[in-house]
Length: 104
Image (cartoon, rainbow, N blue to C red; front, side, top):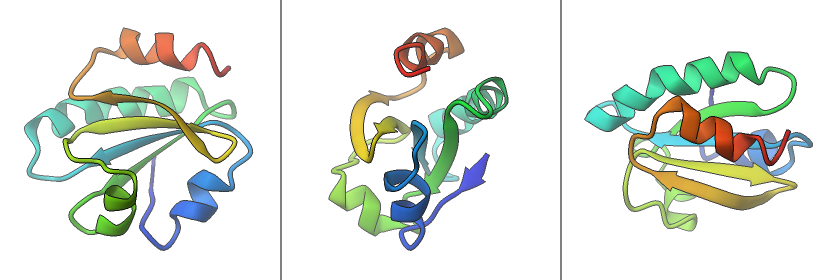
């Protein structure tokens, strides 16, 4: 799973042709550490169909503030450059599979 930054967000997420699942996280966040393995699995399961990336909100505040991410983990699905859906907090893999099924 690729790490994106404020400086690469537009290129990696907004301008990407395939849907992109973005995990907004921080190292000190317990639920973020719980969702990280789920994101890794999804990254492998949907390789070539949906891009899965993460962005550290502490090191990259511009994107987080612009998108009004106030709680983490926040996982947002971008399609055609637009945030389509979001999930806040830890969810099991099945919840993400259901969300992603609309875009595959």
